[in-house]
Image (cartoon, rainbow over all chains, first blue to last red):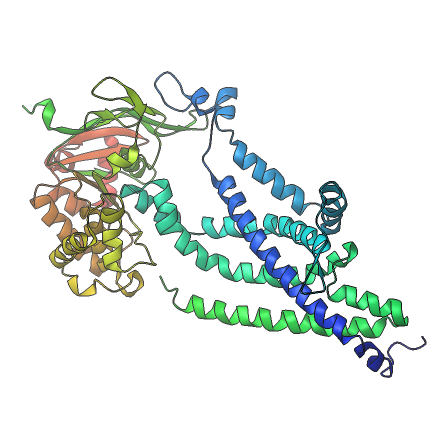
Length: 261
Length: 259
């Protein structure tokens, strides 16, 4: 194995093209499911963080029914357990490495819960794929939560004031006024997150998900060629990510065109 | 002498304090707003006039005092119903009866002018869509904008936006209209068209509370002027009393700067 790259090695690598093909399908499916799980989780987390759920609120009222301004009672009356839990989740997931999270989910959680071992499409091992999706989805949910939250909070506060002053409830304001405007801000960021996940999903080969990276590993094991399959993987990842991000940028430009206020 | 029944909103010792009372945005304001009143609220910037107006429909939550609207103290979290039960105060019900117009219009940019005007009547008052649209078009016609019903807010000039904002609030058939510096964000040549709509509204007997820098409007249209400074109601009276015979130095000083 002397020399950095040998062109003569590529034909050998391409005899394993079938593995790469399957890897591409696995990577794309993994990313799609991850984004879907991540988005639903993120929406729930974002709503929890922005909620006005204060079960101890009554403790902070003075005898005239006004909110107290200071002191321990005022502090605990503002305590929102939903927001606290969501914030804790987001901060923990964002402050620890993905690979640790993937291992904890695979060896820890799904070491206890036995998944049925069957394959989908003949090459997707469910008991590897499913924990991978869950782990990546939980991780991306934490990041998407912040995207969704900032998208919602970027809607001008005057919009909420106008809606509430017309007698709309907080829920009506969110559904009819804030959310439609926020979605426009959020969609490009979610598409970008999809590109990030395509790249990040490579980590799941460590728990035996047969994605593009695992095809590289298989070729390496069978032929002792390393650099050339890695270059093939590089080319595949690039071909997946680059056009996708360009496409997103195009739609982003088109959407902002009608955005004059 | 007017009776109590004429009082639409009774404000008693209204306070809004921040930071343990170090900052007093509102420091004990009391006044009565009667049916048909056109009240101009004037004062230097930072005097609390916007806070006062926004407290009236609880966009700002006061830290003390009472606002009695339709016989209910809306600053309370819980209120007693006529049959004596304590229930959670539902501010949405009261806000329906108080129209509000903002300095920056706050039209909904993703909705057409007609949708802007019908969403609250349809969703909040459950008025059938056709009826709501008919009412909205009639209101738009009154302010000369019926032909812009299908336009989006970004296609309108500032003056047109503010006229739409006024009729959007009117579409809920409020008992009182609150104006928060409605002409401050407008180009000078558009101020007149908005003030004209407000004058017309006042002429029809609508109860109005206007925070304004337009002293001409305050004098001509208002029947009462409130002068606020440092969160306090310094002087209150007819336009003639306030503008011609100011009593306090603060008001004289303020008028010398703005007139």
